[in-house]
Length: 294
Image (cartoon, rainbow, N blue to C red; front, side):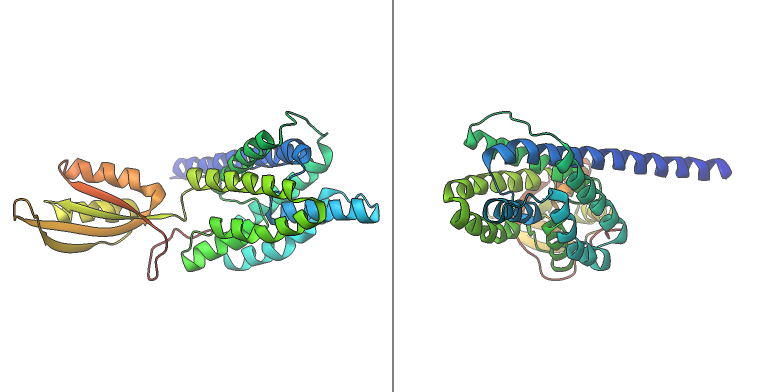
């Protein structure tokens, strides 16, 4: 019994260390991206990073004040962190603020790095790098802070995939930046943010959902597999095949997008002739099982 407990404890410690290493890596990537692609392109990343850079540039250009990134970025994240701590999860918020704190400090420490002066390449690859860094955070139970807290709150409480809404909200920052510093940088920043958002949606699928329509000869066994793999329910419908006129069993279920592949594989193990239609689900209203955020 003691050996089992020790084994479980060892696994938990290993998982925690591994997670902190990945979060440290993500923080370093975020800081590197800000000191390389974002700096060279004069871009505004959006969210609280973009707001911080906007305030820095306003202070420098209009008031001749050079304010360190972390001095602005850390206080701006306090209210979203409070929202996260109260409504999302304490562990999640602590890990996220670790990323906020470390990436903010590293951004001030890292020297300026120039990879290319081509603004279009900077916008595309900067967005790509940022999307990868944020995805690493999300996969490891944290976020990049700022508007990520707010978007995850809406995803958890409202069942809404909020990433595109964040992109829309960032237009306010970009419009302000465009008026003050020129719309060419603001427009390139839209490319940066769009690329970043698409990468996140591709790599992190927890808050995205798909509807499954399954025609099967073994509806109860298939339903049992869906329940086992996802904890989600299903509805059994009766239909008639138009070509043969035969009765068909149709299972209707909504699952997380990250679960789709394993669900399809599980269904095929039971009924290899099952016909499965996967439909992107934009929003649901009603009871839907979610793994709680810690």
